[in-house]
Image (cartoon, rainbow, N blue to C red):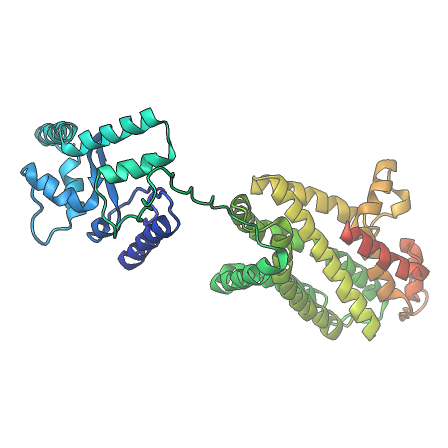
Length: 438
């Protein structure tokens, strides 16, 4: 472990080191770690200490013998001073001045040479040589530990009843991936805690769609039933296709950090892709459904779109499918491309093309050959037709006084202009659901 206590307070760092020590003793594991700014209690917790400086070994042996060893070299630790800090200061080369660097380097060389002549180094080399000749890798740790006379309290007692019988090897410690239903509650709970802790993430999840809905409501406030309102309604329905963009922006803003955490935890075998995606859906869906519910209420209550409960829920579900489709595209791009900027650019191009081919400005049947067939895979195409049929079917508009022409006496005329057939509404809903599932 590389500095496992870095960034932790003194109390937490001490508990972490005690936990590592218990894992080493109770599971018969070898735990090697570097410690940054260790507490003085560290010498009471760990078994062996390796002190290095400039690539030179200054000390390697039992932690409890560290103080007597340096005191024998005329470097006693002052009272009320953290021994670990004292030892680190003792072996650090001071580069602040030529004289200080020379003095500290000489002290380091002296300490390194002293260790080479010490009994600790002699015992270590003897134990390593004995194990090399025996050819037993497992007994290596046992002989080295015994060479340093590690106490029973700090080292797991070995079974020496039968000296001819080799000690039992410890069972390998493996990480078992949690099942989906076991991991889901933990992952969902963690995700919601992170969401409510991060106000920016919460605002991003619900703020974009609400802001867009408020802007549309103010821009198309109180639509009438005159000829001008016909084109205004068509313009609003086209702008509602931009829910596709909102989904993409949400995914690009939220998904990359969660993706990185998932990649790291999946490599450790904690859970699988299914658990991650179900957790992502469980967190995102409530925000999306609630925000879209508020926006649709504004459209039908304040903007005064053609209201019946069936039209309201049809509009609501279509808007949700659009936003969810956009978020799916954003997730796919973020999972495929690590560069968020490039993913955002590609998503904008894809979404812009989908909106232009939706049918509000040019009939889908008149599109060029490749785009005509590509349009069948676009959720925006089906959503545009569902929007238009749900709004204009059965709607009647007032006509101006003659001789002014009455271009759209009914909503059916607008549907004929767009090339939309009201009789296909259920087929369109099924096609949109299919496109969403794909």
